[in-house]
Image 1 (tube, rainbow, N blue to C red):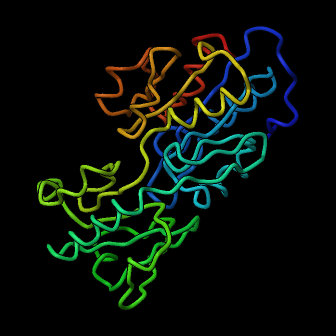
Image 2: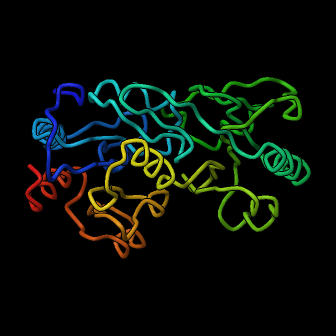
Length: 268
């Protein structure tokens, strides 16, 4: 597959595409997701025409890198907007508010909620006991038990994971101070959820017009990047709230939704 480093420059009409990964670029069960051939074709054709292509994912930098490399990207918004790569250069990840994370974890311990944390840019999350692992599919991330793990001693938190159902969230008052999104019925992810922030960072670096941005997404953590200043495309399999904000709703991810939208707008 062609990559961004080999794309010719367009003088006019260049678009800046930002794609969510899970449920947008890739589909299938967690840990076994694949990019449909039609999507691969669309990416290659966009790059051949000189368009800018980037990932915009909630995945951590470390978790997204294998996908990023395999699919020939040179640009990425990662960590839900708190991390970025521009033209192959990793600009780092801003962690979550440490004091707020500690307050939340103290509340989890007091109320009996199992938890795990990502204290760095890694594909491994740490838990103090075996309870958390029972609530979530391992997927593409390992949960490592560190008996008696003291979160007070950790210098930073990139993500926090809490085993709880939606009905129990109101018990955790400290959640109000942190961004979070429900990833499964039994697990809440405390993580950045402002992908738009990362997009604006990249566009400012490039000094490119926001009106030329195009975003593709399917989940609730894509809501912030569906901005009226640019074109927002919801996959057919997207959540209803996202479709309501979209400029255009395309076909499902596994039904060549990305390619069909790009052809519809004449980008490829």
